[in-house]
Amino acid sequence: MTNFGANPPKRIKPWETNSGQVVRNPNLLLLRENPTWRPRQYISYLWVLQDQDNLCIGIETQAAREHTVGGTSPIRQGYGHPTLTAGGMALYGGELLFKPSLGGWMINGASGRYGRSNVPVIHNTRMRQVQRLFKELIGLNVIIDNYEVRNG
Image 1 (cartoon, rainbow, N blue to C red):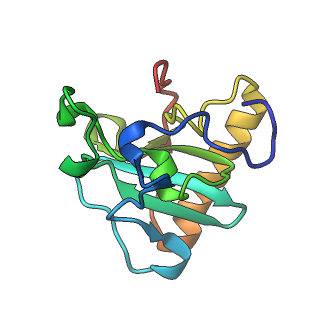
Image 2 (image 1 turned 120 degrees about the horizontal axis):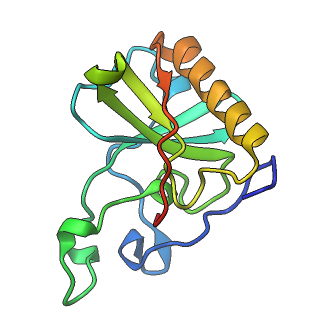
């Protein structure tokens, strides 16, 4: 991902679709529309910066059993970042996690479909933008972690 603008997901996994449409993460919310929302410790969240001033959030949850691919384990088949955008465009994506060892809530660019640009200035700019939005939209201070996803 080298474009500074929005990009489609690099791929959609089979269990993230139903009848040819990308499934919606069952916990999807938009932070701008939910200013009182607060994450709960030790739940793994995904975030997507879909446009310049809003974040889509969802719990990194397992795909519904009817969406799992036959003969494979549903344990590894979670609703990923594309389920936060209906498979549409996004500027960046990553995780929101509670990490006491790092001092509290942290974000990273660990999305195999929308995150981790190979251009450091893009990555750093997007991560600072997301950090600012968490503070502005819901008053949550987050730490930027440089964890990298390699297999997405």
